[in-house]
Length: 353
Image 1 (cartoon, one colour):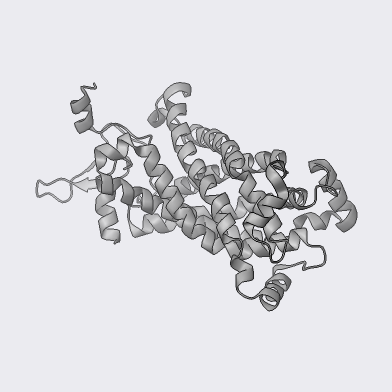
Image 2 (image 1 turned 120 degrees about the vertical axis):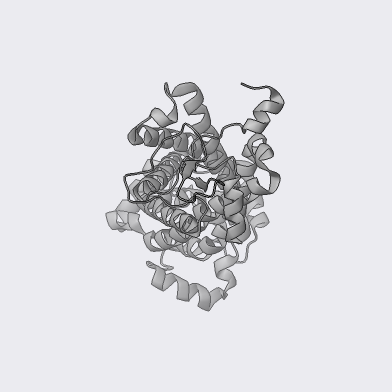
């Protein structure tokens, strides 16, 4: 499978300036860059990771673990108040009041409730999300050919991210369910070690997966927006905002562009996925209810509870995730593709100079 992916990667419009190919002149020691004129270096290192290799995908998964695990855990206090706003707006009237009530009842330590399932759940999700995104992006681009992959690159981003998130949510669902119970059900459990055995004892295995479908409904649109919007925003920023080509930007300047594009993508992500996020929070609190039952009870306006703190949280979160992920790529010498360029064959067909 991975041999096929590697072949697809070498013929993909998403290939990078680090991808190396052997010339067919019999001299195996001669190599040249796949993209002429590009000289971006990932980092000062003795060797570069080969684009599309097993090591490449594995290290991308490591980047996903760090970017998602660290960022989601860092915003646990905001996430806790957001969840409580969604399930009990009468008690937690707004973001600031929610913080005030939580600290008054549980102390500052109460704001860290649910950090363990958040860290482990989103670390697992990040590994699948980012690692499989790179796999599916290369695979889908190879399936439709170089020219179509360039022309329909946004659809490639959407399909690859949706496919990756499908599997990522299966890993996340049990820990997300435990996190919501810890944060929104007073007296249920204070730690992950207390929550999971109680969930298994009272509701069985389905306690961990009853929120999977609404989780897919929340996370798949979120991730599709996150990746497609980010990729497109990076492309547009370098084309219309950044005053020089990417290969002339320093690593610091490139990471600033990454952060800005990530924040823009995060705002759109928050809005698109928010109704499903409210349903997930309410569903894991209410025993015996289905997602449809919860949605009907909340009503249209009820499914937008907590949108403002979620925009702040997800915007910052998404920007930091892309910043950390890109930073990990720099640190580990993982190829970082430049914005896609039109293949020469397509330029000739369209008479583009």
